[in-house]
Amino acid sequence: MQGPVSFGRRVARAALVAAAAALASPAAAQDGPLGITGDAGLRAAGLLDFLAPRFALKHAQPVEIVEDGAAVALTRDGAGPVALRTADGAAIHVVTAPDPRAEAFRDWLLSDIGQRTVAAFVGPQGARFSPAAAAPDAAPAAPVAGDADEGLRLSKLHCGRCHVVDSDNPFTGIGSAPSFAAMRNFPDWRLRFDRFYDLNPHPYFTQVAGVTEPFDRAPHIAPVTMTPDEVAAVTAFAARIAPKDLGAPVASR
Image 1 (spheres, rainbow, N blue to C red):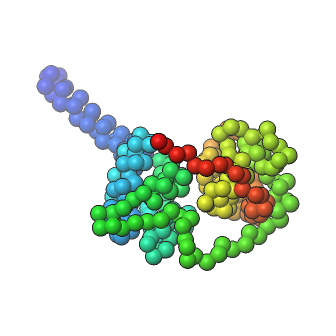
Image 2 (image 1 turned 45 degrees about the horizontal axis):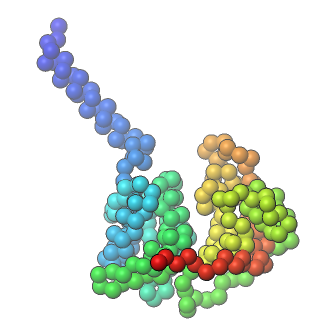
Image 3 (image 1 turned 120 degrees about the vertical axis):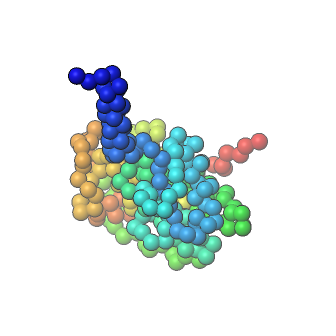
């Protein structure tokens, strides 16, 4: 027969084991800080320290700058989209692990707010970085290859569910989705069309043959299934759209 002290110790030991197991679980890992890292020059300049609290405040997500095991990396080497440029014009890519928090950081950094945050940074030693689109000495972008007429058909078929794609469907989009003409004003419009399937919310319902991974769960709406050539066709159609005049930027007083 066990005494009260022995029983209490066993209960305490069981509680510690359960807590350790919870911390080791993937769900608990995603509840902790988002780990980010970057090339040595970015860390030394203080850019990561500048970005982290601003993203954390916007998304109520703790962020920790780490050396290893990061879910987000800002690096010159990588297959991720260009997020910013160094003073000498070198591209810095944002590479993310398959983690919703990392994808949210990537989307924030590539957004207008994130790019303006990059432009506003001045390091203690005067280091500065430019938004991704600022490349004064960069080679001209490669011409858009693709069947623009087919791109119009595909855009109406797939994209018209949410976006206004041309003047023939001015009322079919939803309010939270920008029109194609509005997106043509974005500095990174080409990336947004070329890699739209990587940008939220598209990964949850879009499949591009030979490019995207299979769904890990059934999408909540009818899925969009395309080929790389069809994606190129949509980009070619977007390239011939005149950017919409959105007026002057809002000025605070």
